[in-house]
Image (cartoon, rainbow, N blue to C red; front, side):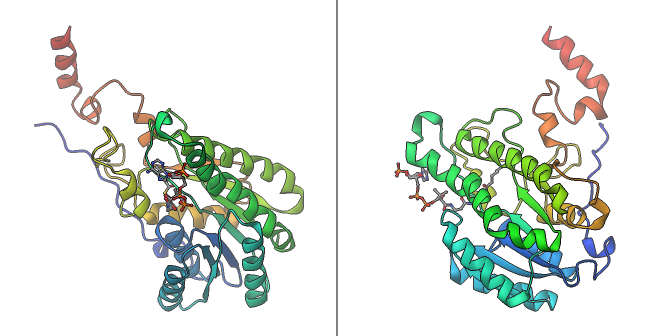
Length: 294
Ligand code: HXC
């Protein structure tokens, strides 16, 4: 019988990072009402930060802000708007600074996605995702930069791994995320002398998120995710949250302009020709399989 692949456990940040490493710090997070960005915000609050979450749906934002405040004993406020509307971001930033007096960390996480082939994408559909993801991230930087300069703070952009190798039905998102990677890198070098760092986190397949549910469309071949991969599982929101804690912490003070995939090594597997993980765990069976095909 072939040996079983090892499964890396999900790590709870409280066992690694001190409770108060972000005490006195304030995070502004777009897309923080749900999913990965909510998890990133919660992790920062669990380690002492206060937060403002920004999004389109006030009901959901208000509920999330209360949930996070209750769970962490820190303060989270809901700020409503649309990253496509710069004025709404400026208002939200002003409310955040009125409430907390500062902004140290910014997470540019608001994103839009759906599966569609290029032949089926309208001009407006392509433009909509570019406007939410790429231009929305730029608008967020513009609205927050003076405050982040004052605090010598740090940015994290939420990108993806799907544009490293061509992903069908994702031309719009791939173009948008590539733009985000470039925006962060230029921000890092331009704003470094002002004390600002800027990095990208690129989540791979992360389970239990609305975004992943939307993409796991069984009618589109290959769009359903399976468990496995080099660490033996798909990702958890905590995996992205832990990377966030590290990148915003002083332990990452020499890291800027970087793109960090948090994908359990999945992206590397996309190019392998051999069955995985059998090829590693049971090489004899793979040899026999290859010979049988010749
Ligand atoms: C083709 C579609 C479509 C679909 C919308 N459109 N859904 N085209 N297939 N499934 C088209 C519409 O027909 C319209 O074009 C244009 O896109 C704009 O759509 P609207 O609904 O008018 O826009 P809006 O209300 O602003 O909605 C934005 C949205 C929507 C992105 C289209 O899906 C949305 O708000 N989603 C919620 C947020 C979200 O998706 N989060 C996921 C993040 S996860 P026409 O020509 O008809 O006017 C994520 C992960 C990425 O990003 C990495 C994964 C690995």
